[in-house]
Amino acid sequence: YVDQIMGRGVMPYDLVAYKKQKKRWARGNMEVLMRHFTDIVSPNGLSLAQKTVLLSQLGAWMNFTLVPSLFIVGFLFAEMISSGRMESFFERVTMLSAAALTIHIAAKTVAFCLLFRGRYSWTDILRALAIHFGMNWTYATALFLGIFHLSGTFERTNKFIIPHVPKFLKHTIFEIGMSVASAAFGTVAFLDGRFGSAAAAALVFLLHALIFAVNAETRFTKRISAKLLTELEQRTSL
Image 1 (cartoon, helix red, strand yellow):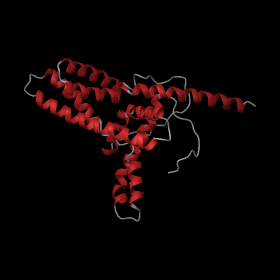
Image 2: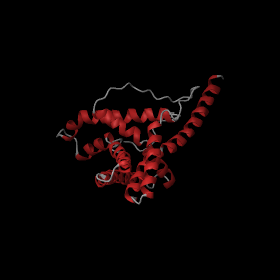
Image 3: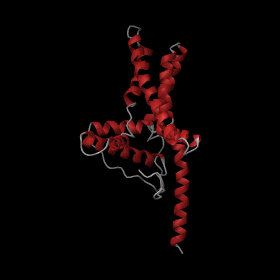
Image 4: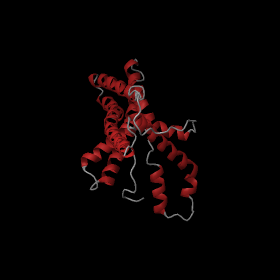
């Protein structure tokens, strides 16, 4: 890894293109890791440092939050409609799932702060962290696609402005749905005095509502793309 800019290119200019790119990266890394994991960890002439770098790079997009998030929303709903006999069981599963999400969020936060501290401002570090969390659903589903070898087509990342921009709602329906459901169930839990369940719902809401932050950040790349295209047109017309 060379910690300096070796080349420049155009970023995906809208949320849909960005999600396609990240999904392809996350799934590709998972497939490579699963195929070559034994080769990497077995004695093969690579040093421990080299093996660590390979595993950390290939596992950078790993995200196991899909199941805990679904469990929290599902069991919060079950708590609402249960007659009380299973309520304690639902609450325990919700708390275990919340613990898993807390560990994930804490580990990612510490990793971002340690990795980028001193190289970027804290504002930029927090922005990058928010975008990473906002792509939670994309990373988590890509992980399962890779693990279970589910078929999928190669998704090309659009990096140039097209006449018809894909609808935001159409491509974020799961994130928005999870945000709404967790907010609603969390509010009910809070009003009912189940503060632990309400906190669990808040974690799910945080991870999925940050998709709006991702969408806001991609607007900047759209302006840059437009500027680059204008400059290109001016140069070619000379």
